[in-house]
Length: 282
Image (tube, rainbow, N blue to C red; front, side, top):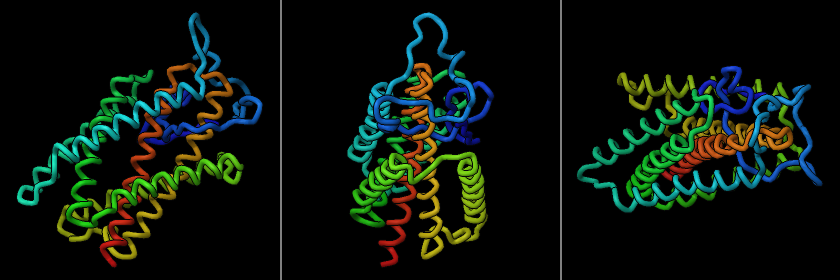
């Protein structure tokens, strides 16, 4: 089952066809008694990539190890930035400046990886490090001056969403089909366009932009973002299930780790948005 997203990482033969992938998610998925091909390719899409001397197929253990390394880097740099770069109310602009710079560097590294033909651990871990700085600074500012305690709630909410999608996928309550992928792609495109429009309206003096930063519209917009993140997780589970079943090259585990990090950051930020607005309104 091939999927694509015009923003983030590439995966498998979608990369070879020049299409950017959605995200990738590690999970112990697959049929009991050993993985079976779950895709609808007709032929093995990884056959050419897996040929050659010394080629090793990816396993769930590979994905778990790379993902733990990548997410661990995000968590470590987030904690260090929280502790070593405290948000100073008298110079809060400096803190937000650090967050913005870190976000742009992380975005740049993610784009470089997205357009590379092979995964680069250095780029992926570099992205994770700068993403952690961004998350740590933003989370510290939000928890300190806007909504105390919201960060713990957002982390728990992110885990809850991930666990819920994993359970639903393993129970086959969620079935990733071409129609499902098309719907997710269309919804994500609309979401990003609305987000950009909101930023433009805000930048040119429209105050609260399109109203997606407070009140009911803000909460609704954030919930839609969380649902999109959950949909991307389902796509990721499908991709990894097929990659393991078809014997994708071992290096694809780094793309899975990279993709999972992108997805979880998306979900965390949207959960943080919803909880912050909700707590502020109450």
